[in-house]
View 1: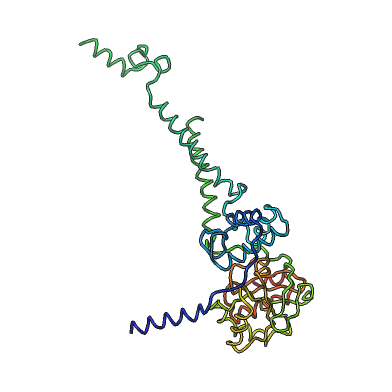
View 2 (view 1 turned 90 degrees about the vertical axis):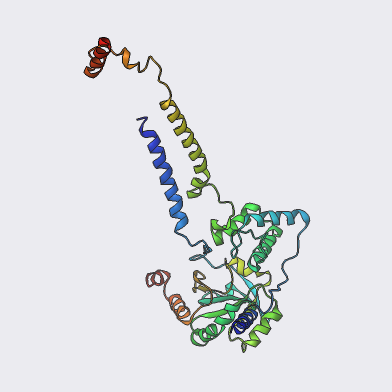
Length: 161
Length: 183
């Protein structure tokens, strides 16, 4: 039974993937422009992978997207224009490093705010828990007589002793 | 006043955190956004697999268009092939169909179609998958629905079923606002 199941699985897989995609792909550019292609490819998210750039993914979709980057570089488009081309189709999701505006700004700013807030709380706690200066609060013994009946009673008891 | 300041800071931080969570958790992490819905379809210039003639978007203007991106190496594409054949038989008088071969060789595409008993749909080659990326595809199969004004009304991700194909084609016959309202 298990052998039959394994055979069925292998047969199903063989039917699913009969041969690899074999489109030619675009020609490499000169080293300077090809370096730009790779650099841009590292900034763009592969649509069918998990957090991998199109420059690092072997997926056919990623290869097609990298080919498009190469074509756009060859057409003389700037880096910004190429990023905009992909954002127009896939949204900001396609950028592996989200731009710092809108809700994305919170992601950039919040760690710093959290650090500052924590620092503020610690400083505040240390200042309030430390010994108070004598001039500010004074000690209970220095309170003028008659201001607190309980304190007066304690003083009276102490004087008796 | 001073006593409330830490509390106000913590509340502000929590509100910001909730805003980030609301944006992040409301989304399917595997879903690739599609920004071209309601936008003009990008121009294309592709070669027919059957006749060798070139086809452009300008030639197709004035007719609703159903574009299916597929590949010979894609199992789900083979599964949906009979659905597209059925759709072509039933709706080719209302809409124009185009099959676009994604990231594949001409020979592989011909063999795959022959193995499935041929294709009634006009099939086109997309060297380097330029058209597929211009259309914002996130894999294959994907089917795009473009109205007679050249506006992308919607796309269907994955192997399309007869009911979805029929509904999307029916929506192409209506004005954009009415089609959205009936969804």
